Image (cartoon, rainbow, N blue to C red; front, side):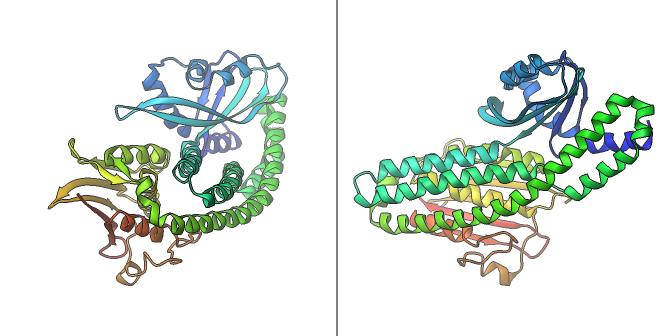
Length: 403
């Protein structure tokens, strides 16, 4: 294998999305590291063995398999950015997964299948839509609710749309590297031709040129989508603030006996893809017999999701120790929830400002997440605090509810 071949092989092997090269019969000629990680739970759950991609697709996305089998012999795209949903057994429970697929035929017997797990974004969209639906039911008797929910509905539709656009764009980032790679392969095309043949060499160069052009367009799309997304998020926040003020005297309508274990399990399912991608070790310790609490389940999920996501993002992807522990126990009539991570941590000055509205340590943060979490917990007559021994020493978030 010459230098050009080795470089192409390394790029595909370590790509951030799953990549598989199959022939028209489904035989897997190549599967990169990300692809192996994404498909491992599928293979185990469905007891799939062998070296054929079609049984895998039949179990998670049969429509993709059919389109590949029924495609013509001509090179070109078979499908692009198709979302397919399926279920897997994870931790003894059945969880729903969402994969995005793109398939390109290089030539008759060389088909490239790209796939990625977009479950986290998909479940967030579903959770937001469910939140809007729950609000509609809870506030149906109040005249103002219809106007508020109408605004939320419009904002959420736009939010989901722009999130998807950004996600697709981020999957094809780094245009400068692609531009250089395209130029390199164009210069090396005569060499490639002698090694892999004229058809394959031409196909590789043409494919890279197409990807590069697509990347340039995506960059402009990203800039536009980010600006629009920030405006939408601010709009949603304003609406929710109005909603909270209006519902402050009617909060009992949303309170129901809630099982905290079920809430935590749902949150973990939504964050599973991020945790697996960053290779973070998570330990959860929850007693079998845990008293229910009277709570707004949706808002409680919002808090747990926010705390866990902060812990995930605080852990450097290249750190030697990447751990999150979540422990729940009863202490003197209080239900104590403790989330500890091995992330960046913070100093005393930062710690005093964490719950101040508008304060953030993230480059793209809004400073609203922890402030909202505090408001939600206190509305449930609970307390929340976050402590750290300093930079590089992780953080501990403690939430308590009186039983």
